[in-house]
Image 1 (cartoon, rainbow, N blue to C red):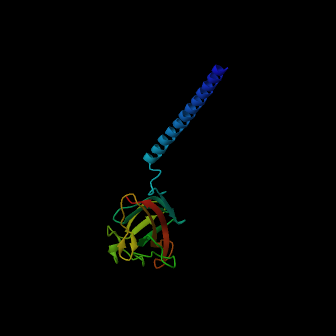
Image 2 (cartoon, helix red, strand yellow):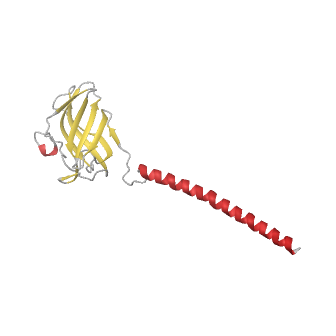
Image 3 (cartoon, rainbow, N blue to C red):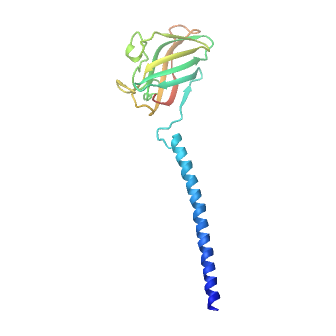
Length: 190
């Protein structure tokens, strides 16, 4: 009788050992698959803290086509005017913040002066821009983070900015200036 009891005990131990090995192998394979998936996500940049959804929101009178900010703080926005006539852009301002009243940039070209009067706000010292309805135009302007401080940043770092336009509309008297926050955008420095 003792012999059978020992045989039963070793069979039970063998079954337990086989069960433990099956458990370890199945969970080991699952952990290995999970590690490979996490590594693949890491390589795609999913865990990058600088990952930002890039977007540009325009007022109902404009449409963003393309936008970027360079590491030296210059903003480029390609846009379309949705006005049926033409507009003449007299001044552009860009800031990382809105002023307290919400009606102009907090920093930079706060009075939305023209390139002729304040060329320091315009990197290309460009002239006044005339945009016809539906035509694509490009504006470039220095953007500011503080008083006299360009919004410079490192490559890939997120940035949120606001662009104001001072313009006249061909259907209104030339003395009627419209000042509007035309674009707000979020992107990374390029």
